[in-house]
Image (cartoon, rainbow over all chains, first blue to last red; front, side):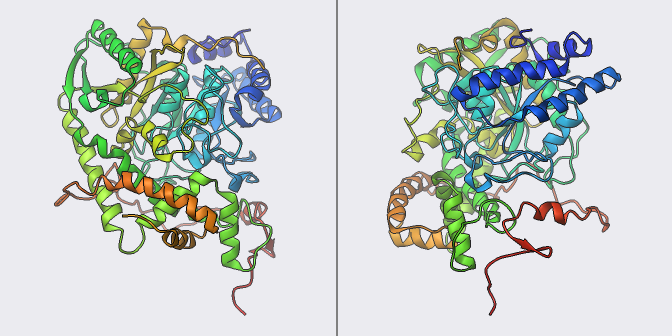
Length: 488
Length: 95
């Protein structure tokens, strides 16, 4: 069988009617992973025996008439989610020997829904990066051009979906880590409203910004996955107590009367011409479907990067203090005393970008600098959130590019942290405000590289955003294209 | 503002990351570029603006004071670098 051009809902229907077994489907994907992972490096860990055992359990559930909407559909998980009995590295040498003793909430949810895990995907170390080059396990290659990056930090997740090594994947997004790699690899990815998906068991980077979400070829796929992932969890202190929603409920609504806000700051200098043209063509497509546009301003969004590079490192320096070589993970083989053990363990276990961010965070939180950096950044964070609140008085959804350009070459930006940081110019504001954002494919540049379009919605408007994306995907086929000629 | 090499070494000491002089020198230049970027927010007038720590204005939940966890010490200590008799081992700190 060839499941690679089949939607999740169609795969689930074939499983439910026993046209295919979950074990067969999982094997097809395991074979494709075995053939392609040497080239793409999307997975850090695969364990066919475990995968097939979970698939057999899904088949048993289907046979017993206990199947849910996605039972038996295999999925890949970002290696940031603790997975009981699986190596869980977060892309770091620090956790290169860490076999998690429990499941993250997201993993629990997918297990309960009967989706077998295909393995753990590669990522920037501790999710700090926009290219996947900071992984201890080596760079992930973009399936559209293996000399280029897939974006990051959920680069392995994006690349494995783009190369159809998995029908879908989980990702996390602190400053764009779902959306930017989705854009670079031609898939659809959604970062939900902060607090909708539990962070329990998701290795923390910047806790006030981190949010998990689905990555898959289409918006309809993402809606189904979001139905599994969301929900209250008392073990995450910022998990929101809300009634369960069906994110597929509005997919088929017509777009007549939809007001699309175009932030003038997102179409200003720094945006690649081909990306701008593709996004503008998508706007024209939405207008044909009955949408109207309104120019809006997110005047403080230009401050999002400096604000983010104070807040995220500050939270990271605190969160990553737990990696001390005492309870789990790497410990330096030789040391003189306790302090020396900490310092050597952390010097050996962390890569350069993680160290840089810990140092920035330590500095901005240190005595005498807190007000000037951390507090100032938190105040501007409010200004940025306020800009969005004003904008949503005039529009239903905000639309712009996901990233200023398309996938860049491996090594092209790795020596200049600031150049790398500018990649997240359009995605960071939604994290700071805690708003949902998604990226969907809207074309290709002259080099044949995918271009992503970003939607940002008001709090809890995921169903609306998925509706817009699905209607767009009904009349376009960018999301259905996949790279040709991939060989092992 | 510009960080000196000594500043970098002091911050690294606070963060418990061993850093050689050569590493501190390389890091110094990169951190200063990043702090130049960060400095652009200093010019913004934020008088009277309430700091925003979180996207949702939620308060900490309280729960009943009841045992909710089972004893999983053996499982957790099975992945520790060094343990003995249920205790985590570290270099001696008290003579």
